[in-house]
Length: 331
Ligand SMILES: O=C(O)CCC(=O)N[C@@H](CCC(=O)O)C(=O)O
Ligand SMILES: [Zn+2]
Image 1 (cartoon, helix red, strand yellow):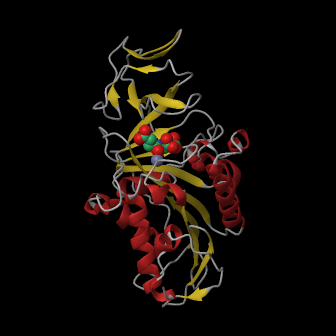
Image 2 (cartoon, protein in one colour):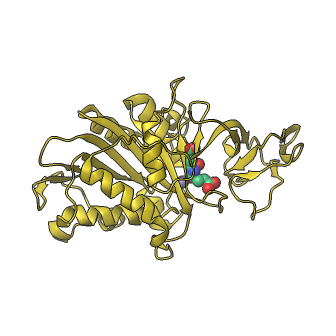
Image 3 (cartoon, helix red, strand yellow):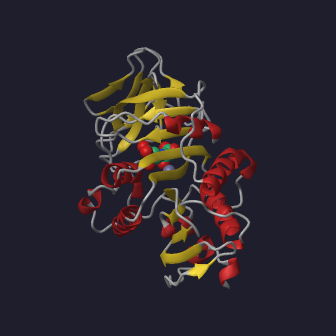
């Protein structure tokens, strides 16, 4: 593979060794393959912002990886010229190679120190590495710090594309971001209500990044994605990279707001979810419905337009097996 046709995905899946040698892209930007699944692009001029784009934190969520690969290919070929600093991280190379969500433990439950509780999981080492790469990238930031962690979901969704804002330690989300999310085709925004062990909570909390998890459709294996369904995020990211313009004065009116009300936690092997596989994310829960139970613990819906998100009885014990959300005003 020459520099001109370098593919981060191919190099990552083939477990090639990164060389950290900078090379100049057509148009004068610089690229460096700094670590496994990690590439940094610096613009020729002053960077107007610092964008971390991660994909493949879950190995079965392949469409966002393909979107990011296509953007990188255009940057490397000089068809796209960056106005900002960019770091691309492919989250879980080993799981991407096997097409599984994770190998030993869900990587997106191991950030912000949680890796120390699962030292033997291969993902624990990767979480440490990713956190160090993200922190190193943002330490050198001179502009606005942005992190978009791109995912797809196991289930279908009432809102096909939605964003998740990590808990902001009491601060409010910056409304300037909402217009960009809408331009990317995002229909709903969930605000988390508590700290978490996710990548976006980590970069928000530790590096002060405006971080969002973006859920962009349904998870499918490589080769089975209809990338036309990802045109909105593809276009919004390319515009952001080319212009470096992160704020938008437009007043979005269609973005629906939700807040996390409570987590459904799988405590033991006795956990039973009373929602079948066809139930989509953001389905309204009838008042009084028994959503799940685990021994003596019963999770009940309390009405008021409560909805279910990410119901999954197959998670490991101790992890979130669903979130009950409710509408909230965004501004
Ligand atoms: O479809 C599912 O059940 C999970 C999709 C997914 O991976 N979602 C992320 C959300 C992370 C966040 O809360 O910011 C995850 O569960 O890690
Ligand atoms: Zn995911």
